[in-house]
Amino acid sequence: MKRRLVILFVVVFCVVVFSGGLLAHAQEQREETEPRYKYYTSIQVESGDTLWDIAGRYMSGGSCSREEYVRELMELNGLSGERIVAGQYLTVIYYSSEYK
Image (cartoon, rainbow, N blue to C red):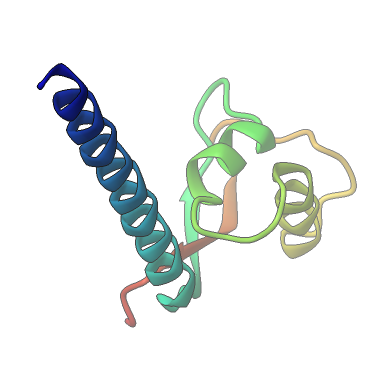
């Protein structure tokens, strides 16, 4: 009787683990196939902002690194360095699954 319970527990455990893996894989595939659209917007730099902070807020959903995003921001805004000042306007890139 005890042996049957152990075997049953092992089988149930394996089924649960296997099912969880399948669900995680299905979710990952759905996210990969969901289209991401690239958009641009203008923001006003606030006191204490850096390009790296801005990248952290807006790059979500993109496929580039934070460093690549900062370089793209610099190029897009004609910046020769990373220095930005409060009150300055920047064009930033953001990504969305919603088509606008």
